[in-house]
Length: 70
Image (cartoon, rainbow, N blue to C red; front, top):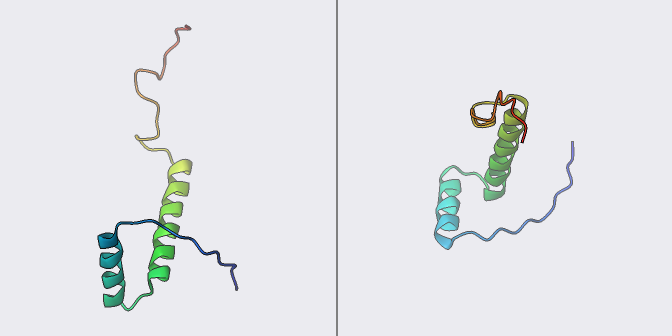
């Protein structure tokens, strides 16, 4: 299976980039592979959060059950 790739540029602090690079080297993992993994995990969490609402996605309690009209 082949996927099309696109070049994406990020502006991040130099120290964070250096730490990320060092961590990836220690794991013998390309930075691109790790960035792809992090993005996939984020997207999956967001999809999951949309389908299964939790307390953070629920309306504030004083609004729910409010029958008064303005």
